[in-house]
Length: 230
Figure (cartoon, rainbow, N blue to C red):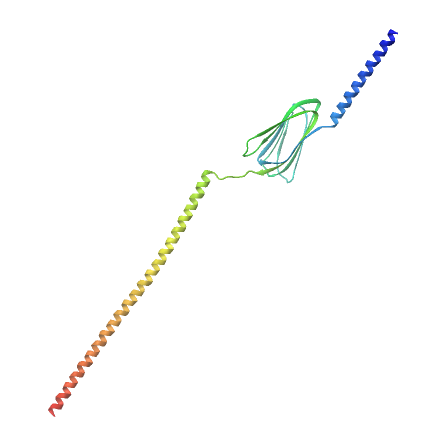
């Protein structure tokens, strides 16, 4: 009776162990068949830009990149991080697959580095044997703002243009005044010449009239003398 009880207990222990192993294998298979997907989509980075993902050591890392255009980029893959960099303007999709032999609890770090913005780091807790990280973003041109020297150069250039325009207007006004003075001077000379000619004509006419008048008086006196002598 005692041996029979021990045998039953042993069989129950074996059954319990088998059920535990079956449950663990089932849960592990479900975990392995359902990897974690981390997605970062629809955002912009100012080119040149760089994306870095850091994680716990593993040799099972794969990276795939697709572009909307035919832009150039650079991908660096290591056992603890993946880096993506580009100085082009395009739409990029970066797919990273990370795999472990056992479940690993960790905090991965996603870092963004841009041309004229401060770096950004995002910590993400993950506990899995298999997970993926997907980025979909547009690399755009960074906005440009004029420097103090460029502003002063533009202002100086504008003032120079204003001065040149003012000088051109003054020269034009001077030329117009010069032409006006020349015309007025020419008219004055012509008027003076006409006055001199008219004066000479008047003097000559006056002289002719005086000569005719003198001849008429003399002729009248001679006629009077002839008449008295007769």
